[in-house]
Length: 230
Image 1: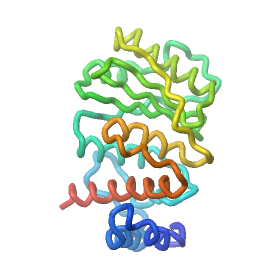
Image 2: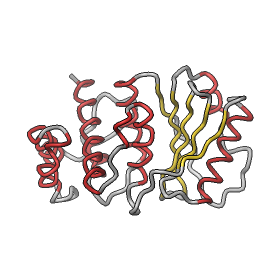
Image 3: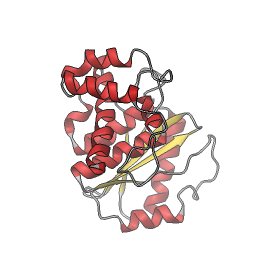
Image 4: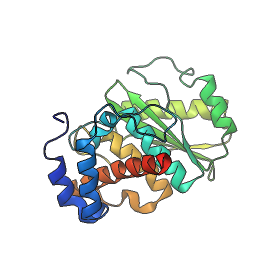
């Protein structure tokens, strides 16, 4: 399978003790490399293939399917959370006041979960997010590169949601943690949401720590799929 990083297996061996035990991590790497790329992963309510999760390797960008698959595992494991993708936007975007579709507003209004994860793709090249905290009545805007133009857009979207749907909620902006490279934005938004559910998820932002988190995301997706397909 040439499309998989040839160093993937070795990296998994090196990281295995921290991620899920060397034996399990090695088994995940072997399974990833031996499975036909277009084999479907069972258990998800949307089509996802093994080739879609190759971005677990380093220096690759998370696609929307990996983010959706991982947040599906979070919903199953922790409960009281769900994910709704916001519409992709190109900057500069001047459609102020009309960036949140009616279907999204209705879903937010009816949601009974404690946390709602709203990932958004900007310029087809960057992930950012808004997290709705229904317990505290707040919307948290987060961009892992902490760029002013990104944050202004997120704040505008959050304010639109508050004015049309979640009346009385507060809007806050989070400025950390920040990424130091160009390919981990998807991982960072996943960790940001994961930390709302498990405080240790965002406790290690070294190069090795982030590598291990990538493997934990991959492992969670594969194990969830196995459990659902059993």
